Image 1 (cartoon, rainbow, N blue to C red):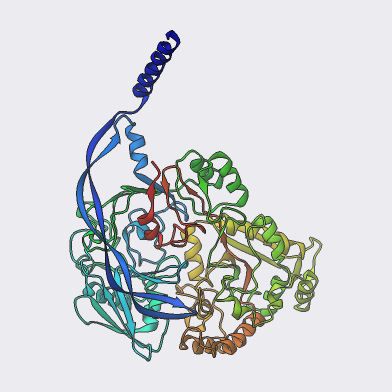
Image 2 (image 1 turned 90 degrees about the vertical axis):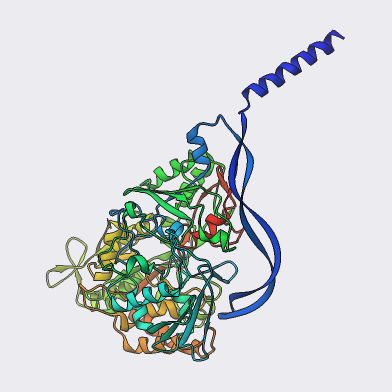
Length: 627
C-alpha cells in the first residue's frame, strides 16, 4: 500500500513539474480566413503537346471570407522566437543589391530577386512546369484570333493596388504604351518588336494588335515562363513620371505600390523586409487566402559556407543554389533541410543551360574557325565531374534537356558540339597562323593568344564552369583567365558588349518548343557595341539562320513543319558556333522545414521550386507553419 502511495506522489510531482515547465497558453484574437467549397465552371488553360488549349471544366472551388477567431498561443516564447515563427527568410541569389532605393523594374539592370517580384509585383499569368497549366493570376483569361495577330487579356474583378486604387485595363494600356514610347526601358524591345498598338475593350479587357502572327505571345511575354515577365504598373502613380529615371520609391507616400500581398517595411543593400498586407485584394475577390507568413525577409550571406551555416542554424529557410558537397554537409548539420529530389541528383533541372559565350566583335573570336577550336578543347565530362561533382549532364545543344525539346535535338548530329578533341583544336589554331612560343602559348604577329572569361560574383556554378574551362584552354596553349564582376556589372557588360567571353546562359527561353531559345541569336536583335542590346548580345549576324528562325516563329507550337526548319538552322549554328554549349543547369535548392513546410518537391510537385523567380508567389501561398 505504501509503495502505491509513493508512486502516486511521484506521479503528481512529475505532473506539477511538467505543468510548471510548459509554456503558458493564452487566448488571442487573430484575423483568419474561412473557406467553403462550392462547385462552378471555370476555364483552364494548359500547354498540351506543345499546343495552348483552353477548356471549361467543372471544379470544386474554395470561397473564402475573412473572420476574427480566438486561438491559443504559447505566451512565454521570446519575442524573437515568435517573430521567427511568423517569418520566412530567403537567400538573395544575385547577392548584394547596390541601390536598395530602386523599385522600377523597367530600368535597365534593375534587380527584382530581392522580393520585389516574389512578394509585391504580381504577374498576369504563371506557367506551371509541373502541370503544364498557364495559371491565371492577375489576369483571368486570354484569347486570340485565328491569325494569332490579335490577342485579348482580361483581368480579374476586384484587383486593387496596395494604396486601395482599383487596377484595370487602363493600367495595362498605360504600361504597354510606356514601353512602346520608351524603347530603352528593360524588355521594351520585345514589346516594340511584337506590339503595333493596344486598346482598352472594357474596364478589365485589353486588346493587343500585333505586328505579325505570334502563337506564343502570351506565353512568352505575360506568363512567368522563366524568372519573370512584363508586369503592369499603376497609371495613377507612373503617369507623370519619367520611366527612365523614376525610382518608384518614397516611403512617405507608401511607395512602391504594387498589387501583391506584402508591403515593403525596410530595405538595405543586404536585407529587404516585407510585412503582410491583410487588406490584400485576393481574399475579398475570392482568388486566394492570405498567405500564412506574416513577414518575409530576403537577405544575402555571401559565400556558400556562410549560407550553409545560416541554414544549419535555422537562420535561412530557402537557399538559391549550392554544390552537392555543401548540401551533404548541410543535411548532416540540419536534418530538416531538403532538396527537390530526396536522392541523387537532388537537383532541379533549370531551363537555362550553361554556355561559354563569346563577344563576336572581338578578334579572333569573330572567326568561326577559332570558335570551333575553343569548343574542341572543352571537355564537358570533366566540367560535370569537377564543377558539379557529377550532379548534372553535359549539354548536346543549347536547349534544356526537357522532354518536349529532346525530340528536336534527336533530329541532328550534335558531334560538332560534343566532340572533345584537343589535337583538332590545336590544328585549327595553327591553320589560322598561330605558333607556340617559348612560354607554351600560341602567338601570332607578336600577339599572344589569350582570352578572359567574366563570371558573376555571387553565382558559384558559373565560376566553377569557368575555372575548369580555363584549365582546359591553358592545356592547349591559350592563355585563358577568369574573374568575377559584380552581378549588375556582369549584365551591363553583356548587353553593352563590354566583355570578351563570359560564363552565361542567355540562350535561355525554350521550355516546350524550340523558337524562344533559337530566337535569342536572331540578327534582328543586333545593335552596335556600346548600345544596350535586348537580346543576341553576342552580336552574331547570320541572315540565313535568322530567316529560318523567323519561319518557325509564325508556326503553331508542335507544327510538323518546324522539324526541317530546326535541323537546317541548328546545322548553321553548329558550323558557326557563336556560343559554346557546356552543361545542363541543375539547381540544388535547399528548403528548411524547421519553421515552414509544404515546400515544392518531386514528391509534392504543385509548382517548380526556384524562389528567385516570380512564380515564388505560388510557393508563398502554399507554405504552412511547422509549429
